[in-house]
Image (cartoon, rainbow, N blue to C red; front, side, top):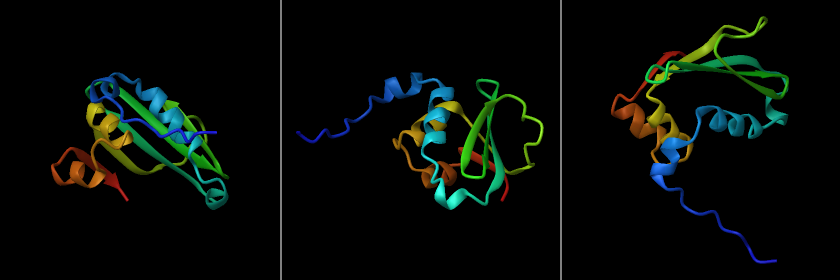
Length: 111
């Protein structure tokens, strides 16, 4: 069978992807083995869209919630605030997280 190589994503298309879809993909990429003893959450805030996503890792499973945290969700270890377009570019590796931090495009509260 021929090898299928990933194509480059069109930046315009990337900016149109729903945030919920990007977070759903993130949840599937969790390294289950190394996160079995983890119970932590991180909040992602997107003021330009008025949205917040909470990613909670519990015993090797990533849970993604849009809006308010579910009961029993631990306090976030970090709250990341950024423009949704910047996040989309970062999630799709069109820009590096380091460059976003360097230019002030990401505010991190917590550890």
